[in-house]
Length: 261
Image (cartoon, rainbow, N blue to C red):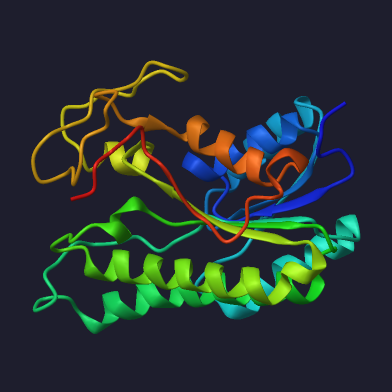
C-alpha cells in the first residue's frame, strides 16, 4: 500500500513539466491530488486521468497563481472535495523574461513578484488549514546561489520564496509540519527546451539530454546532462513521505552536482 494513501496534496502549476511529474509520483504513492493549472485544461485532465490510473484520486482546478482570490479558492475547492489537506507543493511561477536590471520593466517585476505573492498566500492558507503532520515543498532554483546576470527578477523572486520557507518551518514546526525548498538545476522540460536551441528531449531515468554550454547554463552537471522532471519529483516524494519528514527548513539542490560559481 502506498505511503500517501489517505493523504491529500495540492500541486500548483501541475499540468506539465515538473508539476506534472510530481502529480504522477505522488499518485503512485496513493495520494489524492488537486491538479492546479492556469490555462491548459486538456493537459490537466490528462494528469488527472493518469493519477487515477496510478491508484490515486485527483481533480483538476483552474486558477492563476497571480490572482490571490483564485489561490484561496484552490484551498476551498480542496476542502470541499477531500475534506483535508496534507501536502502543498508550490510549483507554479510566472514566466521570466531575461533582461539586465537597467532594462527590466516594472511590469515584468510585478509579474514575477505577484506570482511569489500567490505562493506566499498558498503558504498562509496551508499554515492555517493544513492537517498537523503535513508537508510543504516550495520549488525554487539553484540560480539563487549564483551571481546570474539578466535573471535578477527570477532569482530574486525565488530567493524570497526560500526565505519564506525558512521562516515558516520555525512557525509551524510544533504542529509536525515540515517545510522545505527543492531547487532544481537545469531540467528537461518543454519550457527549458524552448530556450535551448538544437536540443532534443532526453529520456527518463539515467539518460537525458546533454547539458548545453554557453550563456544558457550557469553551471554544468557532473553527469553531463540535464536533469529530468521525474528526478525532481522523486525528491519531493521523499520529503512529503514519512521517511523524509525529519528533513525540515532545508534548501535541497537537485542538480546532478551542478557547480554554482
